[in-house]
Length: 346
Image (cartoon, rainbow, N blue to C red; front, side):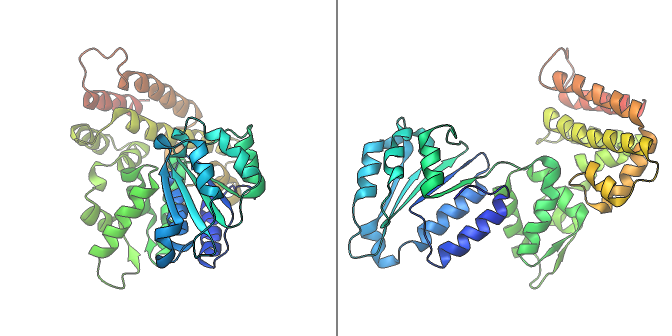
């Protein structure tokens, strides 16, 4: 069974089967984003065996401490007083001879559930292990979402918890957490515990009060003030951002680069068609909630194609400077103020 493009959907489907007692003999869980991989691995550990059978039939190994021969011996052992046994290899990518497991995966035992968990790494799809796991088991690959996809993912995650989150609150939480899904899940759990029971909606104010971040000093708010050419506010936010202990010039420049890349695409679209329809707009503002489309309309009026391209050129220059290139004695915070001032003066 081959991986699905949508890791979230794939994960839900598999966890449903696991809870229903439908197991594959092999699970290869791999990829840079560990959130869904951990969910699946935990679901297997919780459901393959009952509590009584666990002591005799559960084997958990770690890749740095085990070789293929040992794992194969574990997997070929028959269960004791149970229908099946579970063998889990965590950090399987650390095994020196991982590829040698292909021999077992070619003809796995139905009475063994073998889980190969590769957090932050992937098996070589050209080689036998991946091919045999795909043929005789389940392969799930989970890769990080792009930054612009995170607010949408956060909205879906909150919905799965029975709570609606406003678009600006989702954007604020995405900025704080980056693309770390596990961090977002943890912050969501903390947030929902702090809010009154039966809360059905979460605002940006709730995020500010309970997660410890503020719109006043966020890149999200900085892009908004730059787009509206509110110079005084933009420079004040840039100054406070630069003073923050969590401030990272490369991350801030990256966020601004993503924003102006979308502005450039939207500006190019509006040069061809002054009044694009919703489908065309959604295509170029991929992942942007329609709640923010008006902001992009203003941004395009202030930064048409040529100015958007100039802003992106500046961001490339300051990406280099923010990583230590040719900056003299300027601090990262001073570099940010300088960058914002130059963008505002385009």
